[in-house]
Length: 177
Image 1 (tube, rainbow, N blue to C red):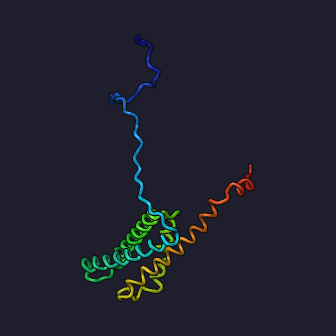
Image 2 (cartoon, helix red, strand yellow):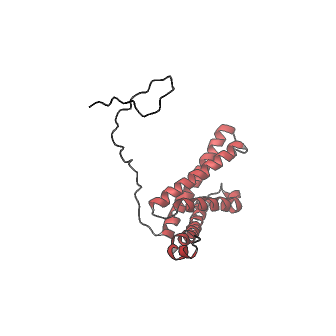
């Protein structure tokens, strides 16, 4: 039975003609990619991730030096390009550390990695900057990174557990309704 009444939708004042939207299939749930996890205890996982991130830091630092030498004729890229390269290297180290800590099943992986890379950058700038071109720096930077990741894991675990543990007892005492 056809309905002869006018439609209840607002008229379109556009000069374009409306296209009929075909009936679509129901939206499928997006597939989420899950990283495989390897259950490792927190401190051990942080130290392992620290050693890997430290080795990656040495590799990216070497690649940055070689790239600057190829482009500018010197291993230093001071000024704008050097700062951009430094920020990109730090971002890559943070991302790699986050990914590795997630695979190892560490909670608060992003904040742990960000804090650890910041600590590592300070340690390298204060203690190791003059001797990065020596052979023992290949061991010193991964060890410093492992220490930075261990400290960062301890800090984020201590702070993160305070926020999540025991919230039911403390939430009722701060109810301000």
